[in-house]
Length: 306
Image (spheres, rainbow, N blue to C red):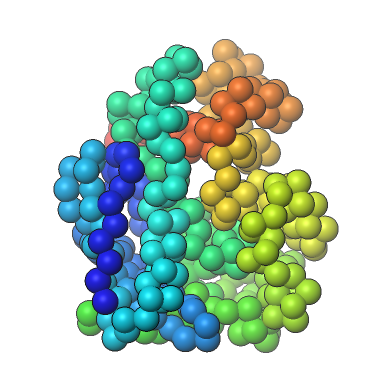
């Protein structure tokens, strides 16, 4: 089965998907040159697929190949997942128009043209990643997550390449703490992941329904769970749900970006950052994404391009 997706507005595929190789290997999202390979979990079955792209930034076409099935329901689920991964539902043209009123953002549109936030394809995957990334550098977090995916995920071959389906909740619910500790998870993080998976597997936490709930409900629900605070809830809304009006103001890198571009030599409080971001309305998520990308460019320039 083949699916062709057009993009509304510009898309820089390489920049958008950089997160899948920037901090290390992601066995659940295999990015090799001009192809992304992944496995969809759908109604108890696994469907590997690959996405290729062609065309200039202003007119990209995504070609999706799903072997061994012609089921329209699978096609719809794969399409939805691809749209999330490539950030296709963000209003990038609208953001660029709004950015003209902000001197900092206006200067980022050209060097970062076509960059879109990549939204996590599944809520459990997003939350496990968030727990993994708590208070550690992202390279270490990606290495831990890769070990977890290889240990508990399901390997599937597509076009001669092995991709791991991200582990489901029942599998993670059965994970033993010593095994997670051997992957360099702390005891508490191992417990947080297992507790989260057990809640999902038991039906006490419906992540699909939560992802569609109002933002305030998402924050309240997640912050009542052990190990999940406001930082996790904000990133879940931003990169798990793709909400536009979200600013993870408690994130260290976000705070550094705001200090760098708006602080005027001062350290901004979390409240001040949220107040500043609210002025961007539905484009807060995009604005933060662009500021973080600009901060990385700054750091590379200072480090001599490393």
